[in-house]
Length: 127
Ligand SMILES: [Zn+2]
Image (cartoon, rainbow, N blue to C red; front, side, top):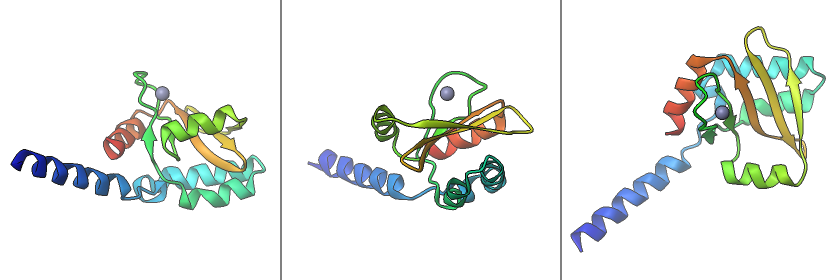
């Protein structure tokens, strides 16, 4: 019984933590600004405007130490949306590789390569 209650408390805390929205602009303000600017430059003003409300849901989770990609909707949802048809917007970047995966005008993930510090930071926030 005590164990069951303890488990419920831990589970509830976990849910609360998960529900706390981690906005990209709060987690990585500099990167969010850069992403917005790159999208504007790529002729995507609508996507650029959406950057301020992007949520960091999951880090990519792969083992590539070079990969700092992340999902802005829950990973499984992003995958199922993507199967319905999406497009990748390649972006200009001073460092590494940057692209936005877009489904129905919504960014579902951001592909980032070559930024180890961003990778560590995102893994920290989405753990
Ligand atoms: Zn990855």
